[in-house]
Length: 110
Image (cartoon, rainbow, N blue to C red; front, side, top):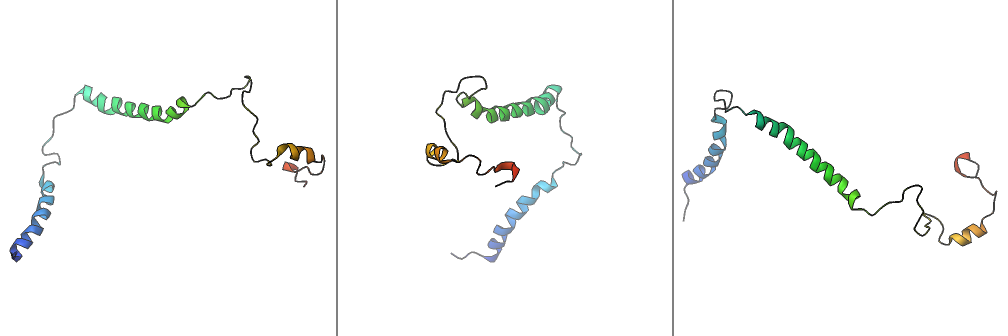
């Protein structure tokens, strides 16, 4: 089946013309719409933004609410001691340490 050139041209132009139809709408103040009531203005500009803010605040605090209780100062420590970034055998490292060999830290005396 052979498609004519006119049919091809028409199949290309119809979507382009259909996309330009909204440009001819009367929306530049010539046809004013119905004014919003006070209740809708309050809903649109107060209730919906406030609801979005509260929803975001809830989801940002949700992980903290689901977490187990944390240690608070003044309460007894109920966990095993843990040494972060220390040697593999802390007991041997403490026993082998020689006091006064290096000061280190902010004194810059290594």
